[in-house]
Length: 367
Ligand SMILES: NC(=O)c1ccc[n+]([C@@H]2O[C@H](COP(=O)([O-])OP(=O)(O)OC[C@H]3O[C@@H](n4cnc5c(N)ncnc54)[C@H](O)[C@@H]3O)[C@@H](O)[C@H]2O)c1
Image 1 (cartoon, helix red, strand yellow):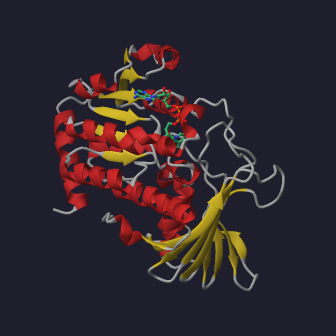
Image 2 (cartoon, rainbow, N blue to C red):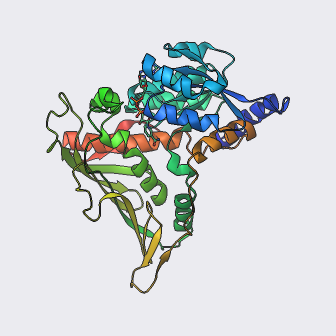
Image 3 (cartoon, protein in one colour):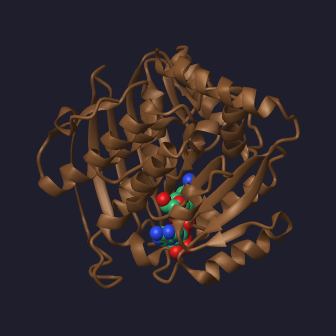
């Protein structure tokens, strides 16, 4: 059975269960209610077919704050994530803990028969991601990665048009994720973010969104990469930091396309060409994907929007998750989307650390 049919079958089973009671809500637990998890919890609270029934965090202050926000739903609270996994009354879990914990928690939840919304990156090492893919493939529940660009209407529409030939054949992609500073060193996540072992580093923790969108536009994953990076501004700041503050990587794809990607945290505010951009260059012209999908023909005569501007609904990706559970739709951010994005970022880190060209095949992970 192929992956799509497998998910459809699993979804159909859920539908049969839930179909017996139209008023049944999908009982949902949130593990990790810091910055992202507390936001995702409010998205779940707004879903008509879901109910927040349990919250988990090892920090009592964050657990209390989230429970207060969700007071109308009266969720149970615990500091032990395994209690959420063991609770048979819970249908679905959101995992919004630091990245190094995702694989262990996701595998446990899947083995307990739960639907999983797992924040990106799905994992921080190739070996753990390989393990996760195996378990997802054996599960009958939905696995959805928090790469929400996949549910953004404008970028989805623009990439569909690229695939249909709107800019001709794709030749090259130039993309970046530039910020003017590190995340604040007293931010909620500062206790793990600056340690590569826990976050995976800047590229894995944040640029995974951008790298995924580049792969999506190109229509495949890279076959190899080369690049450089390091710490030039934030040396030992915060103390013990081992994640790079700048990286410049070139990825090579089997179809001959190259992706040139830079990330840095010292692009001055107000200086042009900052922020997040993805220029996709084709034989007919180029489109910038991250902002308004503006298209520029190669001869400069045409300049227009590839797709009309749309107001993006913030909850879209969570809505898709519950739609997959209830209606058996395949996830638009399944484990292979998550694994490919994370592995592309891990490859980028490895080439910068090792100073050599590295082939994707060295991972030994089939995506
Ligand atoms: N999709 C997005 O746009 C987006 C945005 C921000 C963060 N994220 C992702 O969400 C995840 C969390 O990021 P954050 O910024 O919310 O970090 P955070 O530090 O603010 O929150 C993580 C929470 O997990 C809790 N935690 C740690 N270990 C735990 C354990 N063993 N059991 C239960 N709780 C535990 C922490 O106490 C903390 O409250 C990361 O993977 C990050 O990449 C995604």
